Image (cartoon, rainbow, N blue to C red; front, side, top):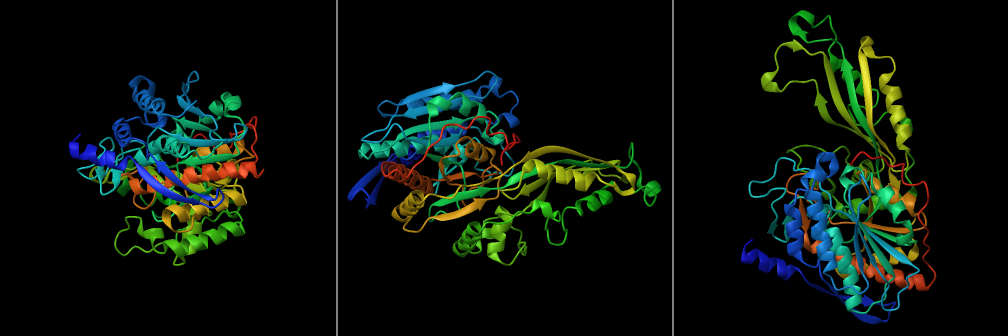
Length: 516
């Protein structure tokens, strides 16, 4: 690592923000040690700690253990009085970092803020620029490139930095618990077990902060209000036991590709992309409609400009608010894989025996995922065209999540933080992804308020090539979280927060299929 890079990292390691706290009737200078030490985050990017779904030998390979050790060691080194840092690993499961920080400066240990993040990563993906790579951290133009920095390596650094900022300025805060899991990108299948295992130690959180979401721009604070569910799997249409000469068989044996197209037309209008099964649609709440319209006003053409569209491509609607709703509250079908087709350079004049596609059907947040899977099967498996052999192997059938109504104190705190650190109002928008842990936590902590935010904005490209962490956004999100935790204490004193213990037999409706 060059001296120049180290110097830049150290320069980025500290942030001083002024917060005008009208509730406390004083000026609070919050000193945020952003990600506290940038070099640690740089080293984290170097570790190819892929989620178990993408590394079956993760335990043997040891990369996950390396990532856990790096974060655990850093956390233990922070000067937070009374903090407990523990690596918990149940038999046969991925590890989890559990951190407990007692209330400070007059805060209550009876109330609790739960902060969540994850440390596992998506696989490499192709298409990285020549001078970039998934395990090669590069700091350039205020961005830290590499896999996992924004999704979601910064979470543990940002969470503790927010708490340290409050303690340094002697601002009261409630007891805080930090959970950093290691299989989020595989569907968080271990998370419910850990939450149950640690239920007594977690207590009754009245606020859950999740630092693993997106932002519409880097100009203001964004909170996620909903996530889509997901259903899908492998659809196969078979017409032959083996391939035959296309000149001999075409016109006699129906093409498996053509029959597949017929089946797909049962569930999607090929001209508009609208999903045709009415039961797969859901009523959009008025509040979410208003939020979508506001997001469209703020983002304008950035709603689609953020994607690498080919020249001349038109989005699926002219109305920008409709585009927001399309990606957050309406079902949408994607074909993400094809089987049974040779590559172009090896394709001969053969009528192929079968065609298979992987279906990825995004669902409205309030739609039951299991029912969606049943509807897919009913539509695709009935009356096979030409008597072909049609199979659908469902791999995914998970329910989305619609956030509970935001309490007035939290809405005020979020907007105040955005105004303080961005000089612009906070924004609220659903995300199109299907992040299982969010629904799980919603089930586990039914009495809690949720602040779901993150740094994954335009072109940050989580899961894809050239993923980056927008450093300035990370700083401001960290400062905003500190502000909200401080406001949570004041709301708790006023009796405006309500926590609940972990709900038994919960957290199972949201699938184990990976993210997102």
